[in-house]
Image (cartoon, rainbow, N blue to C red):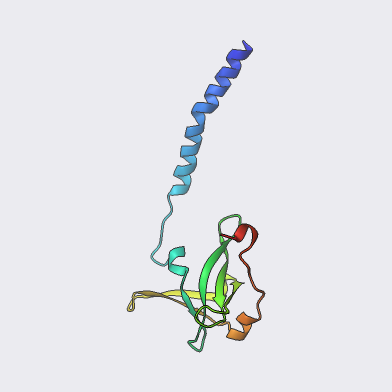
Length: 131
């Protein structure tokens, strides 16, 4: 009797697992993407200009929290032609990203100055963040 009960419980779990997985996928797979939204691939590599229209950095990566919400943007700042540059993390609110319909391109801007970006703590790709 005990073996039969265990077999019945195991079979129920085995056959119910795909149903649980399907319902989870169905609930989360339906996401509306608005025309005002951006993709991560649109952001990574985007040059960031300051208020004086000077190139002050480039978006290198996105920092996601445990809930998969964007927590920060990793910028490559300083240096010349990629030599001597370093990484800093800024909050998403520090960067304004827009799409220029006439030029058919994404543009990034910030009110942060070169000195402010230079004074920020350096972010290093180490530990679990190392590719």
